Structure formats: structure tokens, C-alpha cells
Image (cartoon, rainbow over all chains, first blue to last red; front, top):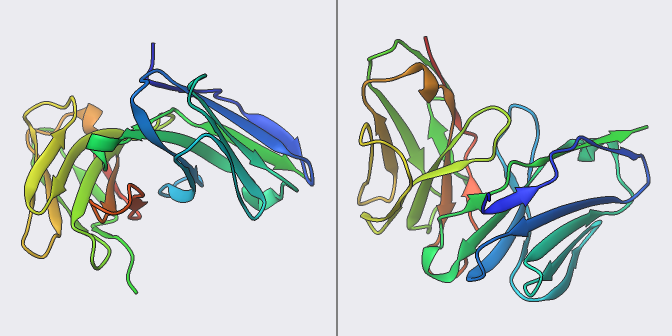
Length: 112
Length: 113
């Protein structure tokens, strides 16, 4: 079992709709959770971080964390063509800051 | 304010050669981590350095080594290159103590032929 799992996609989303991305992790001691966006041929860009159970909103992005279910998600509201990218879920433990476990990423394609 | 800078951006090497990749973290950040990303996969952790000390090492062979300098910049060295070392090498910068957030440089695309 992989430590961090994501749906590989591609996830096709009509422009203006909500994109929903899921991530599960296996290590219960994981403490910090991140979503990175990666455009083709570019490096990952941090878009959200979440540390406690519940929702965290930043603009059109909402991250949701459920530690009991070992599940973290990302919602992208009002999806735009510029949101077309691969979204990487990353987790780290409190005593291992800087050592991220990444999922393989979910490719999102926003269609006009 | 400069972000994370990596050099070179692209590199082509021959099997068996050695390569050195460089990274300068965000000003004020004392931690640098290195990752390898092959096509279609998420980044894989190679090393983390904080205050010039190795804090973690991933599951990579001894051909991979790294170090951090007093100015917190870092080098990743790979000896005896294999075709399978072809990948995007990413450097991540973080402060190391206050926040677990990390920010990536633009990466070095290494092609081994």
C-alpha cells in the first residue's frame, strides 16, 4: 500500500464547475497536509496547507481534513482553464518537517 | 525577494558521469530538501539538510550525496549516472522550525544518455 494515494485522473471538469480531488494516507502520525499544483514541465507550487480537522478556505480553494478517516481533499470552485494542472497531495510528520510523502498526483483538465 | 533558485535548469550527461546540482533557499530559510521526480510520479524524497546537518535520507543509493553550506545553499551530487537517474530534481526550501511549509525551486531537468 502506498503511503499517499490519489486518484490518477484525468479529472475532466467543465469551466465554472467544482473540481473535487481526494487523497488518503496510511500513516496515522501524519501531522501536516499540503496541496501543490504542478503545471506540465514546471515545479510544484504550494496552494494550500492544512493541519487540523475541518475545512480551510483560500479564495476558490477549500481543503478538507479528516484525520480519523486519514483523508484530505481539495475543492476548486468556479474552475478555470488555468486550473488545468496536476495536483499533488503531500503529507509530513511533526518530527520530519521537510520530508514530504507525495501522492502520484491527479491531473485536472478544465474544459471551456 | 528571491525565491528558491536552482542551477542549472537543464543538463545532459552520459552514463557513468558525475553531476552536481545546486540550490539556494529563500532568504531566512535554513532547511533544504531534495526530491527526484520522474515522469508521471510524485516527487520522491532524497535528502533533507538543516543548519548544515543531514536530517533525513530517502531510499536512494550511496551514489547520491548532498551537503549544505554555511550560507544554507546546498549541492546534490550523483555519481556513476544511470539512465534511470533521468528526472526532474527539485529543491525545497523551508524555515525548518516555525512552519512545515516548503517551497520549490524551478527544478533541474537531468537527462542521462
